[in-house]
Image (cartoon, rainbow, N blue to C red; front, side, top):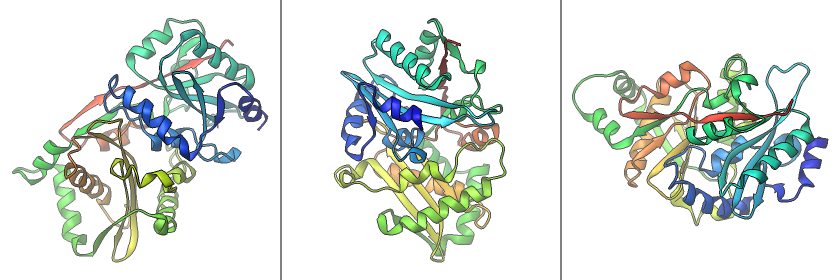
Length: 339
């Protein structure tokens, strides 16, 4: 679209390239000392949240200036009539020069003629922006009528891995433990977990597309299969950073049944889960099994926290909150508009 072409002519703006991972990683290390285990401090999240497949740039766009990095996407607002396209500034990181950041927001607003969404802000950052001219709470310009801040409508859920696994083998009953046991009773002998590689791309893609066939009639499921194709990509640098990613395909009786993708958050002992896509209609409780199975793998590598992200709906938030040993963190969106 014309807006993207105009944006790419701006200073410091360019498409995200695979080799940008090392640049991003340097910012994640710094940001993790400010907000520990933040879901937005990851390559998988940012390239998903900004993906520009519609415009020929699968990983989205970036604005890099001196000590500042912002990932930028351009998307159609759901249910907008007439259709309106908006820039998203996602998890801005580094040293913020307030005047230059406001100029970036203003320029994106001028290019698109539409409000600009700034997402994945901490409570402190959000409160600061609301004191400034032209920055508004997302309730003034909700992204979706039922999920005004998309996956930050409900807070991020961060699970204590070790305590959760201890609950699993300890005495007493609870819903998650019961479902995990029922799944294993039925499928344990036919399960296989395959570490992801490019040879499994077609199987993983099949799972992604089948999952979204399940979800296509949901009014508040804002994601689509396209949003997960970045996680199927493999890059030359991944071997060097193999201990920072956990991706795999789970099969049952040699039939692909689930795809998962997780990434270390910054340089600490937390991990974010970015894909838990399962054929849950054919295999009851596989989603619960997959989460606990991944936690076992993470625990073996001394990862202590699994961030499941925020949620668009109360139902999804309730599913993530099944873990007794968890805490929450609300992240925020704000909107820039001079209209």
